[in-house]
Image (cartoon, rainbow, N blue to C red; front, side):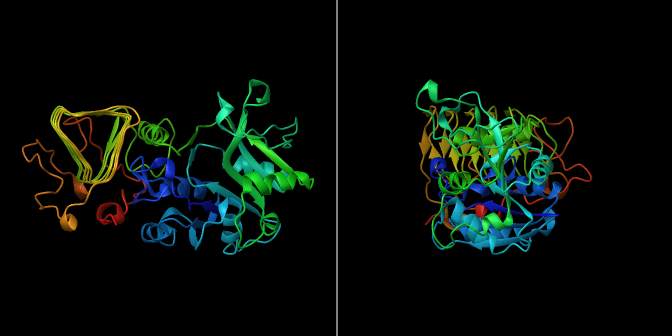
Length: 409
């Protein structure tokens, strides 16, 4: 079996306002926190012990994931008092590993959705007797990334900064945010101080003639660091473009979670996920979007490739494209929000009570679907926007409780 570390301490600044109340790895992607997808994939690849390296909003991880047993692994938490950078966080988390110095340790960035072949990556690390093996992916336009050229045998030749001219683009291979370290190499990273694994540890290993290899994987790969990528990742999971055992329902055009209400005349599609107790009103169109818990989409509204935060309310007839609406924010009826618009969070209703006049059900005349077993909307021809859990699928809580009750400070 293999042990792993997940880097989950970043503030997710590029995703704000989505990350004001929710740390990036806990954002619901395809109906569950991103980390649920990563954990199930890691467990399927043979990981039996995982350490979460957390810092920002660290208190919200353990109440949801617990000891990790329902995800098929043992989970530990390493909470940084101050950010230590990627390399420092790896070194800090390694104190909670139990494997020997010659054993491989998988390290994951906590914001990359991938379908990579993890057993193949581990096998290559072992057969190459590598100190570190990096997962690499090819991108059509590498100008936004550091480049990682490799030789015929896969040995890494250099770690290059983002290219500024066409002549500097010597490869389309980039760091995919997943590594295998031999444990003893992690132990050589300076402890208790900020260290960048990308800018310090990896180049330092090459300078010391360490055995550093890269494995190019053609599978699905997406960095979730910006809202457009986050929305695309969720839609791809819902539609089955990339598969995950943690998806709380079968793939399809939409995923409607527990106690959500979708009007029979509404049209969620394109991989839309409708969160718990959310409402989608009559004749609303919601395309490839993430609608979080308790949000309301008013009648006739159009929401495309957007994120609607917890408890947010979108007025009747509003049109949103490529926008982000923060938790409890309100968008007026018939308002137009274009690409790149970000609406800051609003104030939550008093006590977040379901019966509060300022709560999340202002359109009580909306036609509602009958609730199915365990509060799920019913499956069947009555609505193409509903789902039920197929027998044998592992069930995970759709959204952490803090998404439903956490108040803005």
